[in-house]
Length: 183
Image (cartoon, rainbow, N blue to C red; front, side, top):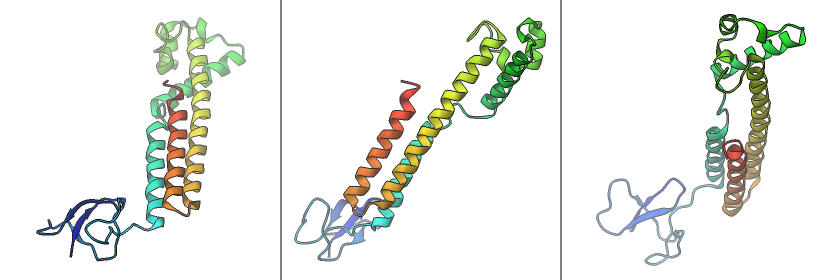
């Protein structure tokens, strides 16, 4: 009886007739390999549709994780909080730009670090962060929508071809949204 090495997607990668390695599995007669009949009439056992769906959804989720929250994290959130406070001060009629630089760096250390690099004033730095935060939130929403839509399409698929098409489409959508800001 022939033996084969089968990868995680259920495809035969190596076929053995003599002295198979320990990781090879027995391939019963009547099973057909993905590239057609090999040495008679057998193929590698196919993985279940549900397992293929799960793997496709995990590929979608992995792509999502690559692009999601590129600017997230405690420092970014703290900088956003500082930007909101500067904006509130401006709305209340205060003039944060008129404060001594030392006071600005004490009250808004992360935001003040941008002065002279990304902006000329504390208010400009705050506005820049608020704009980026809004853009990032919109992008995160688009990524989440593409991820959820792709996962639903994969789960609704009734064939391997449909699973592959839905997964590929979702990953392309995630890549397009994820690369939008950096591209």
